[in-house]
Amino acid sequence: VGAITLTDGATINAGSGTITMTAPDDITLSGLSTTNATTSAVSVTSTAGGILDAGNTNVDIVANNAAARTTLSAATGIGVANGLETTIGNLVATNSGTAGNITIAETDALVIRNAAQTNAGASAGNIDITAVGAVTVEAVGTGGTGVTIDGLAASTGTITLAATGNGNSLGVAHNVTS
Image (cartoon, one colour):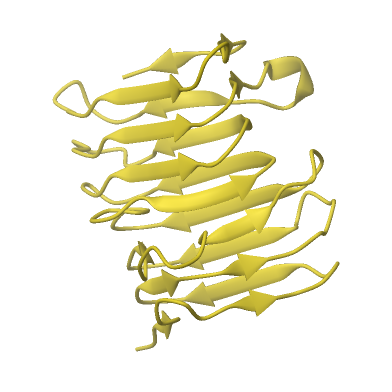
């Protein structure tokens, strides 16, 4: 048994270091930030719970170097009741449970390396990623694996990718399948 809970307004500033959080239960986020420019800049894993938003006082995750990767992994959803606000360069987000949405609200441009509902059974989660900037689904040649809702034919769920703001584009260089 164990959860990690940051209250709304709390912050963790790792400077140029990496941030890694792992718990068997829910992880509630607020104000994680790093200037780290590696593929392990931020990693948050809930093995049996979800990754939740503590509130809207802070952007939940800031790791905005183009080389910085934010990896989110959960079993019951990511940003389920209130989407995670992010300012990140590169995203990997997976939800392994039969339910639970992946909801990300990016404050600028975003490269999606992977976003997936990965349950092999009948998955019922949505993927909703919105950015106030360009959104790119990364190509396979650079390591992208697409945006997918896996599972049986009976799986339900929708995929919504949006690049908002004047002149911003949605670039799809890999599969988007539901």
